[in-house]
Every structure is written in C-alpha cells, then in structure tokens.
Length: 197
Image 1 (cartoon, rainbow, N blue to C red):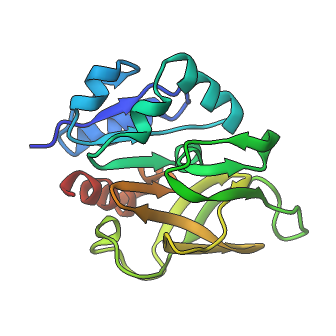
Image 2: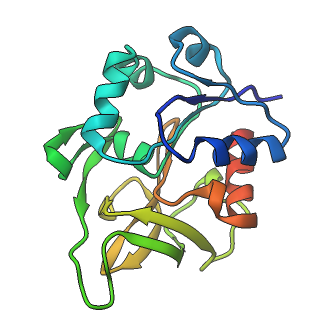
C-alpha cells in the first residue's frame, strides 16, 4: 500500500488535503524532514500564496534539491504545481525547474476577474494515468492568478481568458493547477489515480 507524505508548505489547504487523503484510507504525515520525504512512496507538494515565498520556505528547510532529485511520484497542487516549473512571473521567482515552463499572470477582464476562482472544466490533452476515468469536461475547483501556458507537458487544459495548463506530467512529476481536495468526486478520483501510480 502507498505511504504518501505531504510537504509542509504552510498553506491553508493542508487540512483539507490531509482529510481528502484520509477518506481514501491514507494517513499522510505533513513534514519538512528530508529523510521522511525521500522514503515515502508518493510525495505531495501543495501550496498557496506567492511563489518566491514558497521557494524561500523550501530553501530554508533544505528541500530544494531533495524535491528535484525524487524518483517516486510527486504531485504539485496549485502553487505546488507552479513550483515544479522553471519559474513564475510573480516577483520573477525561480522555481524548481523539473518541468520546463513559466507561470504567467492572468489579465483582468470584464468576464475574467483575477484571481480565477471557482469551478471550471478540464479538456484532456494526451494520456496521463492522473486522469484515468475522468470524463471530458469534468468540473474541478480553482483558486489562482498565475498559470502555465499549454505546452509539451500539458495533459489537461482549461479556458479562462485564455487556455492554460490545468494538469501536467513529466516523468515522475505531476501537477494540478486546480485543487483536487476541493473538487468532489473528480478530485477524489485524481488523488486515487496519483496514489496508484
């Protein structure tokens, strides 16, 4: 059975994420301990807030190279997905660089206020075990102001002001721009899919 851990990112979504994992039958510790993270079967990197602040926290915990060198499945959620990228336009933050690409800020529009907050739909692009059993057009929950354009690592896209990457995969690294822990049965399936990889 999988033995996942959640990297302590200081985000307000930690409790809801751990509760979602408990409903799937997993008691995942929240930790900054490098040895615990390295020995886990699966690693989840959640995050809310600013990319530079989150990278500073990872640096202070001595986890930047730890995360970069992980060989087990890793899932970045929301800001955690952006941290897997090369960087973010937010304060010109340099991120972990395990997935090539940069997160850009949405432009405010009359029908697209920033942040992008609420339910929106997934459009499948290619195959990924993360999205097994997920219907085309499934609804998931977002809260974010920055997003990765569609590119070679995109496995699902969503349209808000423009089409962006809502899920990515590169080797053992996965990311969801949305919050699976807040996305009802669709999110539950996505978390279960990740823990089955």
